[in-house]
Figure 1 (cartoon, helix red, strand yellow):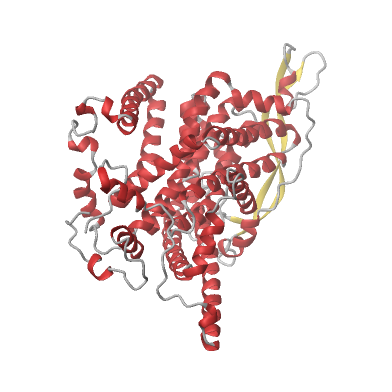
Figure 2 (cartoon, rainbow, N blue to C red; figure 1 turned 60 degrees about the vertical axis):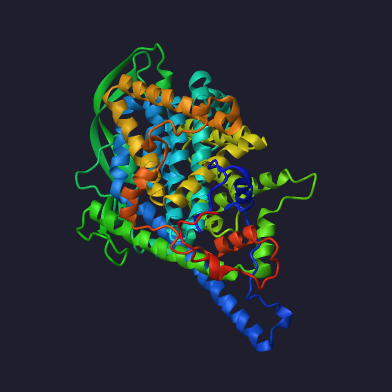
Length: 622
């Protein structure tokens, strides 16, 4: 028996209806044939169940802790590998004046450092010291929003062994990508034309006297630092200095070299400005007071307080301290270790959760997470999920960790795709509140610009939610897009890797290269892409909504060459590389769905039909 054909593949008649009933994204209450009620168990069986359940829960929590630590190590690995490169990108400030280039740089830097918190901190710092304006910083923030979703997309790849889990987990991960891309497609042109976010945040801050606060404690780092700090310590100052175009020593490293430092005073010859009329020196934070007044400059020795190293780090501090290995070598080793650890922890966590979430327990958990409030308050459920996502993200201060943790739960069918969307939207809000509090910790002369850019990030996500979530038809767009990508990956597993490489690396790098080479080349490329995509999107909508009104030839994409409308020609190439053979064996959930769909008259738990269905010839169709 062949694969279940998704409902949107054009299959007609009764077969299409049957497959809608067998929606792979629908949460099913699978019957547990080995389930035994608690009251029917003997005392020995009850004690054994408690011991096994407790042990599994402890192991799951341990796997979750190590999984979060591995995400932190993966972020550190990318920072060590590409931190200097990410910082150097910002030294060409004239490029940042182009909003499209700013958007792409925001994506690439966030992907390279694997942390939107790090990238947005760099953007806020550059804005606060007037290296870039708030207007130039807004596209960077939008790009960071897109780039941060790469982590949970990578995490979804670890469930590729099971076709149905992979379908759901990849859809759960990419719903974040699609929502952020849709927000940028709508709000970036509005911002370029009306400067909506800049004017709104400027009006909010106008007239307010805001005092510098303290940065909140990072709960996630408090929990993971005891382990991760013994493996690697990243010198993030190098990224900031490179972004601010400040002097870096030739042997500066992304891996921390000095573990103890002390204050020192140095003197540098610098140009100092004075007012002609008063003779008073103009401080760095007073350049906006010059106006039309006459000034003159003198070269003087200026005192600077710096930190100098007094004790080199050694292996007692962390594993990769002063090993003599290059940053590229340390980053590569860390990346391999973190990916292996992440795969092992995630696989163990998913298998244990799958074994624990059976029978009544599974039904109760699924019902609590995915059921709406009673009528007429059902519409409030999604907004509560947004608040939960925002609160949990604020608690761990990382949207990547939160979304990456719940993505496997979508894969094993605990969280529905419809519930994943509001949780993800809440995560977008939660990560901006962390940025707001970080901006409030800035010094007085930097506070206004830092806070304004942080508010731009906050209202960008709020506006995106107001556009795409309240209206059911609008919220279905990212859900349907994620389902389409999930169906593609279930049928062609190599597509997930190609999607990841193209969306987060190749396309942004190509656009960045064109913008550096020539601005007209960039706009020519974007216009050509738009001229191709817009007719394709319009025709696809017409094919799904009113196919009978179209000429017969345009009702499908069959009039195009096969390689232009199907992935089949590429499957032979990538399929051989991935060594993936279809339908080696169906999962138990898929078998049960097929049995339920084809044998509705058999309702008793004893009838399964698995022996006949599981090993049918793969060329047989429904």
